[in-house]
Length: 102
Image (cartoon, rainbow, N blue to C red; front, side, top):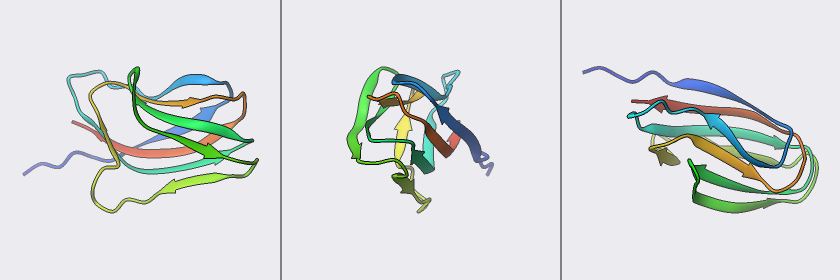
């Protein structure tokens, strides 16, 4: 039995709108297991599979707000396309996403 290795994507977003965090070259399935984000201001966050909204919006009210999802063994999101984060304000959004492709 082979296992799919966990990868880490750094999040460094400094603009509003869609930002591709994980490029899925296909036909792989992307599974997001853990995410740690820090917000540089108030904003709404939407999670997308390519252009399709799959979660959110989550509202973060101030600079220094954080969003942490721990790895409990089950993926928080499964995508067929690129894993995209969308924010509605021009702020800094930084952090890390842990995922598998395969």
